Length: 92
Image 1: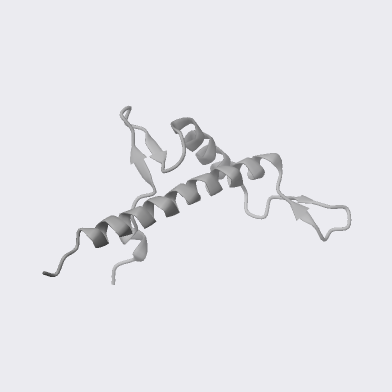
Image 2: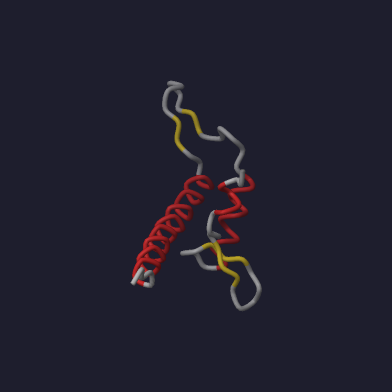
C-alpha cells in the first residue's frame, strides 16, 4: 500500500535561484520558518506561575504566524487547483 505522504502535493516551489520556498511565504520567511521549526523542542512553552496556563515563547509565536500564512495560501492554492481540474475534466 502506498503511503499518503508520498502522494501529497508539494507544499513548496523552487524559485529562480533554486531555493525551496513554501507556498505563501517569501524565501526569507521560508528560511526563518524552517530555522524556527528546527529549533522548536516538543512541549517547549512558557508556564505561568499557577502551572495551568502555558503560552508560546516569541520564537514559537513567530513560527505559528508563518505557518498560518503558509497554510492559508496552501488551502487557497489547493482549492484553485481542484477548481481548475474540474473545469478541465469533461466526460463528453
